[in-house]
Amino acid sequence: MHQLALEAYDLASGNLIYEVAITHWVKFTHSHIQVVQEKSLYWINLQSGHFEIPEDPTDEGSNQFLFENPSHFEENQPGFSDFKLFFKQNFDENIVKAMDCWDGNDKIIFSYYLYDNGWKNYLRVCNLAFETLVLELIAEGDAIGYHTFTLLNDQLIFVKDKIKLVIYEKL
Image (cartoon, rainbow, N blue to C red; front, side, top):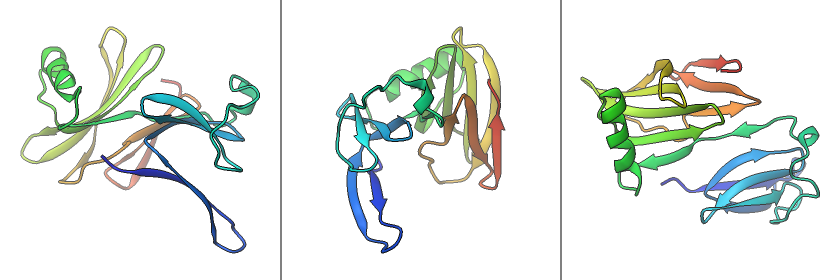
C-alpha cells in the first residue's frame, strides 16, 4: 500500500511547514480536509496541519470543491477476495492485482484489473442493483494505478490511456 502524506509549503521560501501522514483522504472544504486514519474519519486544519473538528463540518457553503476519492484494495489485503468473488458472480470477470471502489448514494464506481493478453484497467459505474451504466477500458500495461478516479462536485474524473482527461457530468 502506498504511503500518502499531506504536505504544506511556504510558497515564498519553499520550506516545508508541516507534513501529516494520511491513509486516505475523503473530501475537503476551504479550511479543512477529511481523512481516514486507522479506520476513523478525522478533519485536518489546512492552515496548521492539526487534527480538529471544524466549527460546522456540514456547512455545504464551505464545500465549494467537494472531492471524493475511492478506497483502494490490493490483492494481498483483506476484503479483496470478497470483491473477486463478487465480480465473478455478477460480471463473470476475474479481477486481479488491485481495485479502487467508491460507494455513493445511488451508484458504485469500480476501477479494477483483468488479464486479457496483457493487463487492462477498467472503470465500471453501476447503480445499486449492480446494473452497469458505464464500462470503459482506461489503461493497458504493467503499472498499477492508485486512486484511478476521483469525484469532484458529483463529476466523475479519470485519465484514459495516460493522456486523455475524461469527465462525466452528474452520473
